[in-house]
Length: 626
Image 1: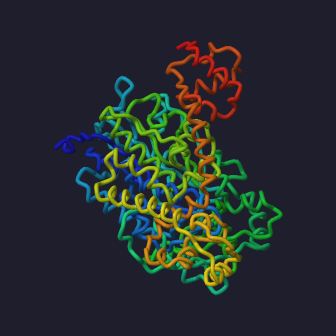
Image 2: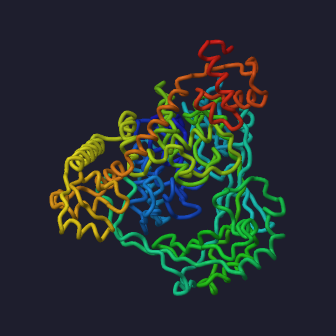
Image 3: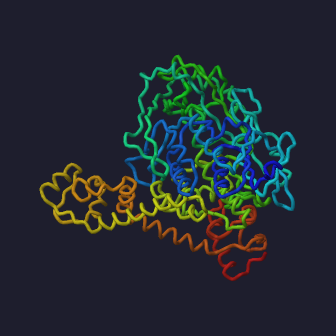
């Protein structure tokens, strides 16, 4: 019983979304895992918005599920509302979003951890890392207790040297009510790992009994539910609405009058905040011509009166927050349960890691989540899963899982982090992927389930369901290619509702390509299609494949072109400074990031196409010096 001697295969530091995915992946693969966290009551906590998914993020959650992770399963089991965003737009930007029951989500995840006999939970603060001959071998907690391990995954979130700001007051904390992780940054520095500062924040929480919802616009979820996990038997739960209110002239006046009390505007916070989720004071300053901003009122759970004020993140003083919130329609008598705050914390720029998320300097040490400079639960969970898989691969001397940009949003996310030397909280966006029509939320299982199966995280039953679904998709597409729609009075009467008309016999797949014709219309036109009762997840994917066939083929050609650069592998330990005809700045960037191939080198900011051409010639002629 090695755990009695504090001996484990893997140690995971931090039990947020990255830490939970990493721990469960390692444990399912047979590793004995010690999961260390500052507070066991905050496992898988959603410290900001109690929601999962949204544009690009929903694709990450589906990819996690396809690889064998659990975020999709937990979200499906604990939702308060499900809603498909951008449903009227193209498939590349459609996104499922769930409003979660915050406490239930955390309990469900903790139960998954505690029901796995390979997982050992420990409430402690890891303050030091043990390394021998450039390889990780253990960790030490604040009490001086040593734990040995063959690999360590750091998923510290905002806790690493965290400092909270409410107005001009500040104190050490990673989250409101939770201590910061002190000491680990110093240990990383001693090992030659660089850290920098980032900043994030969260809005106030308000007592729902003091909200007048009649003054707001109701925002219901979808009646026809969609789910994140590809697993069957998703629970059908009662759903609850969100509400919409807006800031106004008085809100903006109060904020402008109190900017001198903002730690951000007074220079007390040095870390850069998330560009795509700015504080309300930042919105007012940056978009001064905008007379109002949307504010969403969202429930935190069925067992609490706490309500989340989305879009109203701030670090202004608590008394100013009260005045600001009470200017919003419906919140005139609001009681604030928890104030909004900003938090500044240490992160490790991910250019110091490989695509496997392992440190370039210390073997066996992996980083995942906000410690890599990302923002968002979904981004963290995706990294945690990859880091967990690769910690297992490292111990077993197996090939590392390094997902490509063309295979997944997860691969795009990691490639951006390790290649682009980002200095602000990174958020996954559809625009970040050049292959977004190929990397849709609906086909994540098609792209990644086989990989999850090979790794060992997808069981027989799930893989069989996947194969059946793929067969149904292929069969239905083939059937539509062969189905002829013959025009007559009845057919054109149906088509007239969709501003369409047929004057000749046409294949069903050809008709489906028309913008206003959906698969459901084909059902109206053809009795056989109606009686087949094809599952929604099958016919939706068939519809996308048929409608966007030309675009998909064009993007696949783009992938093939990129693949040509990936074939040019750059030797390890290359001395870029011996190469002539490329600038010193380019040499410095290439030396810092150490790209593995020309495709990655071409994505480094500041590296020009001419530089890639020179490197290609050098590699082709085998003239690069090591």
